[in-house]
Image (tube, rainbow, N blue to C red; front, side, top):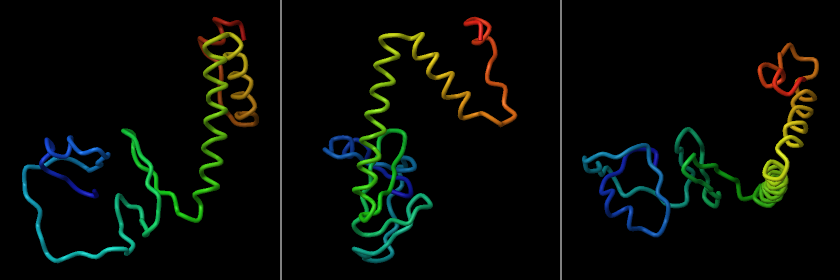
Length: 125
């Protein structure tokens, strides 16, 4: 909802997530019947009928229906990569730190950025 909602006690009993900008005790203004299956603007994003909305406590992303398969493949690949990273962090933190430092150096190569600080001194980089 691109606005506030009320009746939070009732909404919390629903078996679905509900997102809104806030909570208010005021009732809604009713200026017409509304429309169904038309594009809307919500949170500065245009949402078309058939779009897929995915969200969690951090926010919501709108995925166009025609992009869904590509986005799903990218999300699966990202999840697999993150699973490997977290497994390495859990099993060998030093190896993870070395890998992270190398990828950071590669990403920052040629940029006027100081990568090291007290971390580098501790690990003698």
